[in-house]
Length: 187
Image 1 (cartoon, rainbow, N blue to C red):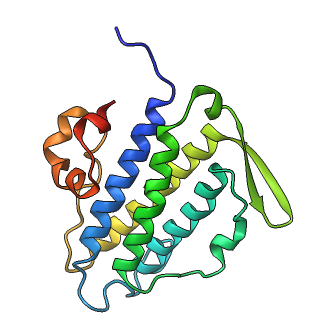
Image 2: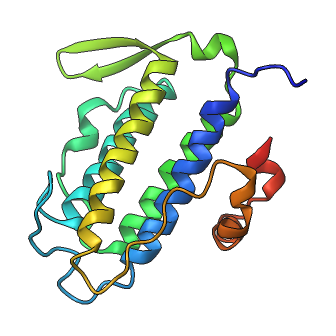
């Protein structure tokens, strides 16, 4: 029987996160003119604002997880991207950083302290807690974009087919786009 690896769930969540972001943003590239920034009912009032929020929050937390001091500079511009393509490129870059971080995790590192620079104070948290928070944040706001897509010309894509082996038949295109293999995803 395989032994439990406390790092594996975080690695799998990082893969899932990148795959789901890729699929969602690919769907958003098919939006008709005006749909990306159109006012909608959600926590953030547009797909554009929600996706920009996801990427800037990722910049903040991934930088902190990497030991950086970017802090609130991540939020200097509320909406740094006006179009889906440039936003998707930036999201892919930060997703790659998060995957790389999770691929090198150890049990000791998961239990280590992360310093999050919050202006006049530094918030200290366990790395495993910051990662759990970040993955939850992503899922929460991706779900909002998914729901907002229902009111557009684009059919919301399936976003929960990435963690288990049986779902391999659904993710082949995304894995190819990212240059990943099933072996990498399932280790």
